[in-house]
Image (cartoon, rainbow, N blue to C red; front, side, top):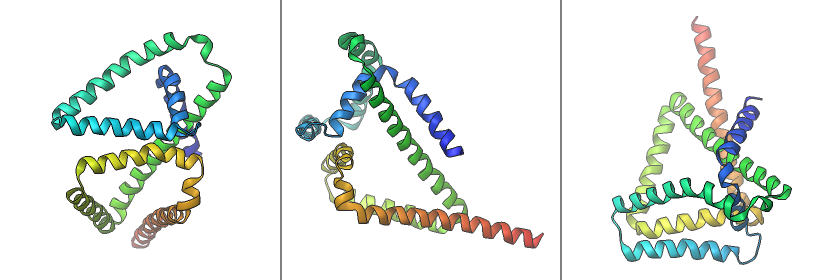
Length: 212
């Protein structure tokens, strides 16, 4: 019940905060889920062009972060004001509104998943500190090794490419078709970790009761 209420609260909050971006979100969602056959090539071309520009200009990290911040600030200020004026009020229909609801629900689900993972790690840190330490340290060591082996710009490009293509692959069933076994194994691992955490808490509670 609490999870449903949290989800509804997230949906209402995101719907209000992203109201000025609904036209952009609608078009972006259409591209990400590959509503047309050439949309994946648009996504790949856009990401590739961006990283080719970064590779060619070779900006410093401070310059890159500053340009990114300026871009985000300009978009946050201009998009809600310019886009409705360009498309007009007649553009938005009931079909667009239903799609917008689906997009907001998906974004809220992602936020809920991130919150769930964060809470799970926090619970693991309290109940099983050694497991938490080994898992986090091992993951960071593997990440550091990968980062030192592969060019950072190339690695970031590949990660961004996967993230951009992931919604379309999920929407068209490619993930379920080719990666269902791996996804199921990850889901089972997460469930077993959560069960072990709750079991450990219950055992600690029983032990404390016996001592009392």
